[in-house]
Image (tube, rainbow, N blue to C red; front, side, top):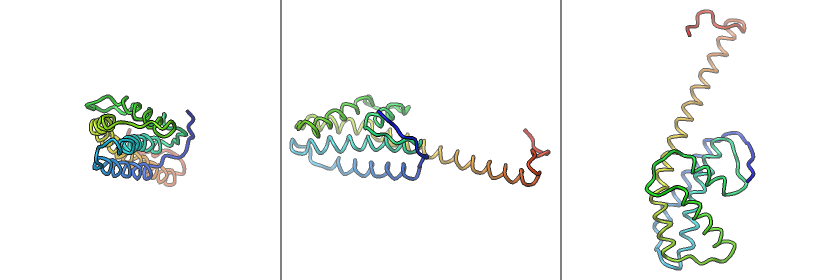
Length: 165
């Protein structure tokens, strides 16, 4: 589990969130049969992973593995019908599909869909709300910085003598 620190990129985070939402909408339209189970599970897992990645990008972190991205989702304070920790089960199934030739069943795909319906949209909305409030704080900080610079110029680098605290 290694992470690199970068600059927070809220615009990229929103783009990743939008892509994950579109991918999930597509995946939920797939017919649920034994032959499509591996695609459904992998796609649903990938949508959750993208949400975790988006949150990390918005904070200025880049993860080198999927575990951190899923753990990031577990830190979002949100009410869901099923435990968010179940997303890690999807990660493990996907890993087995990709690296060990595991063939999931229709029942496992249906469970993945149930997890997605119970957890994805609450996480998505919480993340969007978090990014909007974060953008508001960035705007407030930029405005405060601008006025601080104006005051520094106006009063020769000294505090504004008429400021009210």
